[in-house]
Length: 316
Image (tube, rainbow, N blue to C red; front, side, top):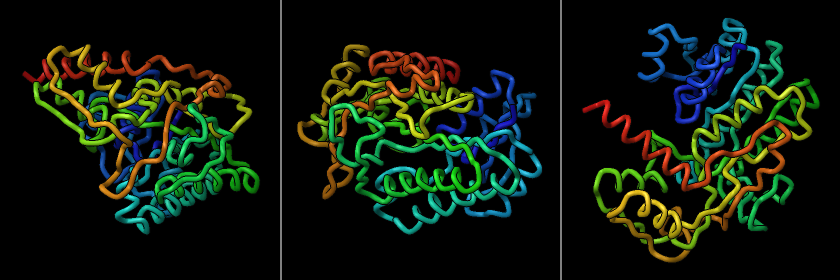
């Protein structure tokens, strides 16, 4: 299978490209740059190709699809994160919505049907139950969640009008080595592994479904491979919520002596904006595409610590 990954050099796209290569598929990385890790793999003979471009450029997307002839698309490219959407909402709308329309148009014009779109738990806004279900009312509060929910609806329009086959995956606080912005739990894990202290002055009572990267990659491949699917949106997470206070306790149990702490209260995106009330994502529907999570937070943290130590030992 030949798979075009928009944002293929990014945090999730990079791991998906590596996984496709491991199983013998060809990963076509559509991005403005090919990162050093993927470049090294490509130069060593991996099934990784680079198609330089930006999703805001429709002509470039069409050319990449015509030249590379992918069988499917994994759509990771986006401006990600609530703070970015607060500080520059017009840019988030331009990239996330117009860019996604360009992806759908390029697919329509070149005859590609299956697209796996990476969405987010931010589409729900405040969770209305301890474990959010895909059919819960979606009331996103910021431009990021609003744009992602809009892309889900646009995909449905392209399915009805043009026969595209979109699958939307709603992830939650994905973590793993190389997260490109400071956010729990990686800020706490990295500090503990480096022997540094780390304190967060808010958020201890916030319950989050922390999702380990390996589960995300597994879920993406399940969606990509699914011959049939009854729904077009699936939660992709661990299925369990962990408060930030519980997160700190788990890390301290795994790394004795870790100097970590978190204050009580809700999690804040900024001094004036609290995060929506969150919790677990119900992942029972995802069995429809063959996905079952392997990592609760403790197992994910253990895997993170093992990988961190392995990488750091290799650089010494």
